[in-house]
Amino acid sequence: MKNLDHLPLVKQGLWFYGGVTTCHVQIVHHHTLYGSGDADDPPELARDREVDCYYVRFDRPHEPAHWQDGGSALSLREAVFLAERKLGPVVNWAD
Image (cartoon, rainbow, N blue to C red; front, side, top):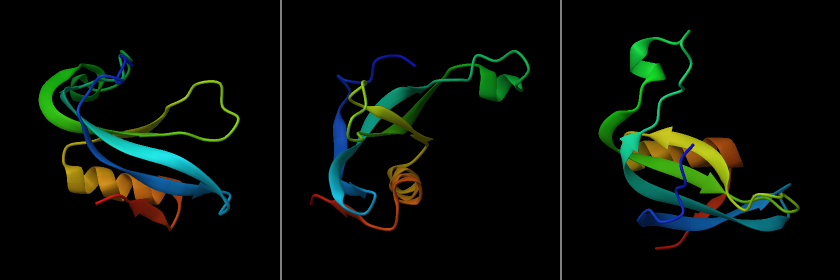
């Protein structure tokens, strides 16, 4: 996936790795939904699309890469749901 470090941050917060260790989560806004690049996938999944979308990124303790890929969504609401489903029952979003 392309570098998402310089995209506009729209939401951020904290989640708890193992229920104990505080880690960061963020949602960034982008105009390109990256496809899988896999020739076996249908074209709508394989190719990049120009569309407003949101990427979930999070960190974990002791990981070599700072931000981990948490998935993408076509709306901010869907991205929040995706983050909460992936990272556990408690994500504390900053207002």
